[in-house]
Amino acid sequence: MMAFEVDPVQYYLIEAEIHDILQPQLPTRSTCTSASGSVSSEEEQKRRRMISNRESAKRSRQRKKRRLQELTDQLKQLRMENVELKTRLTSVVNHRNYVLTQNCQLQSESLLLQSKLSALCQLLVCSRTFSCMN
Image (tube, rainbow, N blue to C red; front, side, top):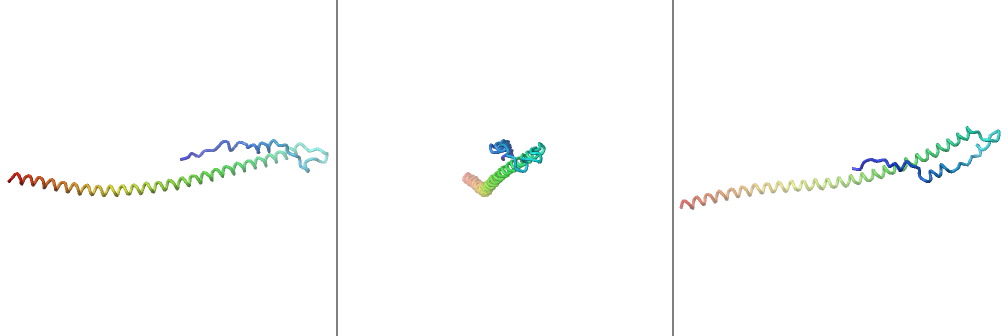
């Protein structure tokens, strides 16, 4: 049976994800200027954290989707293997039943032949005894 394994590669970032993270974010219009004409560092940090969280959530959804696909593929494979094993089991059971039937018939035939042989041996002994008397 196949062991359930987690592929560590799936948790690494793919090239597109790395590109998205490293790509400089263009500031939006609403955060470009404040009343004083500059963006506050707290607002900028909050905006970056929000963008980072969105990207992280997107990567997480992609990993989850890939994992779900892997599990779906594995389930399909295991179901096919299960059908194959059931078919083989049925074949083996049918063959076993055939062999048991043949064995029973051969045992009956063996008993019959032993009985006939025993009768012939007795007949032979009797005929020798009779010929010796004459």
